[in-house]
Length: 259
Image 1 (cartoon, rainbow, N blue to C red):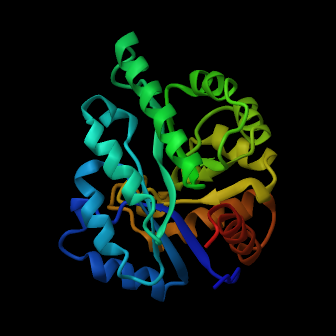
Image 2: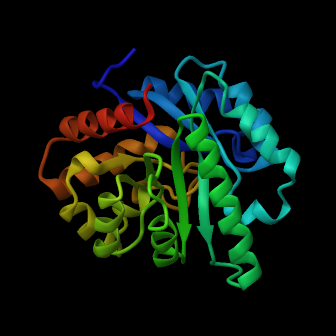
């Protein structure tokens, strides 16, 4: 099943309503453009069942989780359902989960998000799944959170946008860094610097579609086939070929998620 001569979009939201009119067309286009696998990230509870439907595609794999912004509305039944979902044969991870203080940094919201994150890490550990970490305006807080763990599940920091120092800390904890379309933006000097200083063996490529379209398609709906733009930028920064960037990041994904 393993094949390192392809591209993997390790973070897509194809269940999103923005794809309702042409979802199958977009998926076929991606596969025809050299994308070998798509990892569908179902982190909004209303999209869990739709994500399950996407698993009919041989090369679409799933991750289920409760996004930190939704943690306040998750019920005990939702966590029970999550445990069932992660046992699906196509499920490769728990996520995206994490901390997001962008809209609400109240102590109550922080506590709820940390409780949700801890519970979902326990689920990932129980079922031997990787974790996909969402972090927004909370990098130092989540680093301190992870430092309390003796053993953290393997995983990726999705759409990394922190500092080089924070990147090194996460890598030291065993995480990979997810690199998305913003690395192609002209004003993303900090992210370009992080990629420059990070071994390509520690990177994954993601689209986060339908969000964060790369510079070439900025302002448009993002989709898995656009991931080649991110690969091109990584290759340019690392002074390697696009083929090498694709091969290494693909192998990183295969090693992390076991597909």
